[in-house]
Length: 118
Image 1 (cartoon, rainbow, N blue to C red):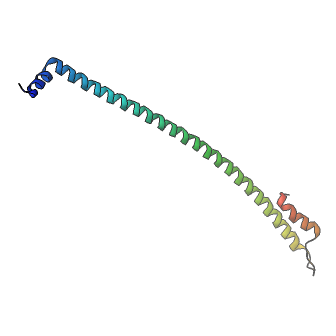
Image 2 (image 1 turned 45 degrees about the vertical axis):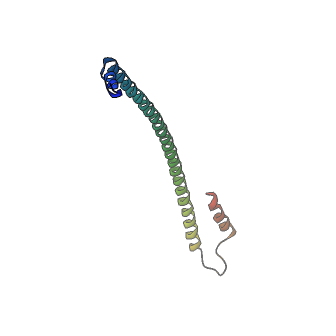
Image 3 (image 1 turned 30 degrees about the vertical axis):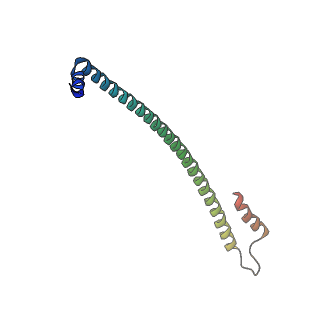
């Protein structure tokens, strides 16, 4: 008998079939275990990335609210300053003409105070 015939007899016997089935089952289980572990690790990474994205989104929304509030404040300040300058221009235009400058010291102080929001 040749070596191949002996191997065939072992493989085709009940013990051989059971050994092959056990080996295949072990291999499949081992592969599934590693696959599950890999998937679990990937899920953990993805959950971490989602949490980071949520934190970034909250920070961006907060920054947007702050920027919007600052823009509204600047718009109000600009409106007040524009009204003050327009009022001063009307007042200066209503003054009678003269050779010297129409702006008095009090007018200069009013112009300087525009920066302070007065």
